[in-house]
Length: 435
Image 1 (tube, helix red, strand yellow):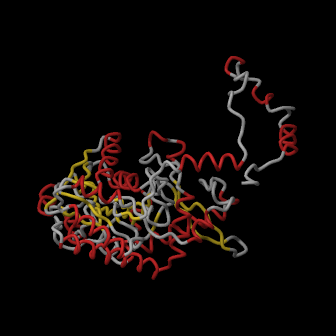
Image 2 (cartoon, one colour):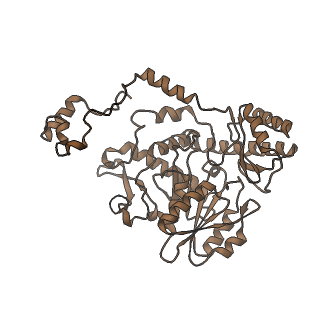
Image 3 (tube, rainbow, N blue to C red):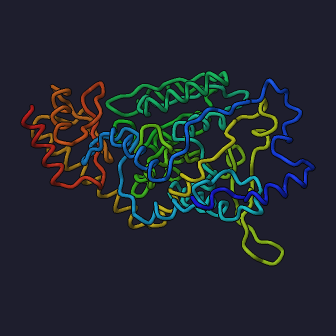
């Protein structure tokens, strides 16, 4: 980070001279003396780069790193090409932030524009924004896009991720919106209940595809039910699954949201992640955050601009429908580099391998008595019964395998392209021995 500090001592002196003072302390003459820190912050002495590396490495070694991961539930370990971190770790990129001065932020703006374009390609939607905090935030923000004076109730499938539902509840509490959970039936949204529950005051319905249990929902049919009630249809999608499944646009969605973590970001407890949001043309002016567009200057050169940004978010916050005032530019750049490196076929291959390996593990577990709880199609996650969950997960843990997530009906397993067949066979053998 040798060039991170943007100005020299001589440049600082020149700036101080331009504003008519001699020292930085003179800038704070108007601040009462009792509010200033007189003796400094008493911070310990700084460390050298080598010492910092040793200290951070020692802290990192406290983490348990599993060679094999069979758990997902919202955070997924996928292969990340080496070029991704090589690009995004460049000094001029690691401090990416909101481009308030667009005319001198062409690189940042272009990276955001490319990210938006790729999200539109994945979802089939017409426009995407410059990302929000995470997938749960994106889902919650979509409610505000759909709500109006007459339609004040939001609906969400019980098969959505529990943390997403919690985030939606928090947002709805703050805005005075009623959030209603539509029950599940056999691991999928109960469509009969959905028909009965949607009324004239329904603003939107949120469906996760694939859902929390990994099951594939009949998204197109659900979209017809939602639109028949006059509500907006919001789909939360896995971006890797979008490579081989019907797009939200093909299923009739008005808004598509999701978590971008699978697109080149390491799994981590709490992030940093990024939420993506895309919408149809009729909804694009209600998207929170900002939208970067491509244009040409008077000389015909390609340029990038903030095409749309909701000023209420900055200066009239009490009237804003959203208070997203930042963007996950570095994470969005990472996703863009990942998608570029993988390409169409690479992304489809990752999705196909995840799908086939998950089905292989499900079949092997079936042979030893861990039957799937739900029937029908699934992507790369599925729930099986398990008579002794704690013993199974403990045995896998001892072998360096992070097992599935305990859920009410058994264990929620996840398999991505990162897990080899040998690792799956090893896991199945351990489980067989325990059971």
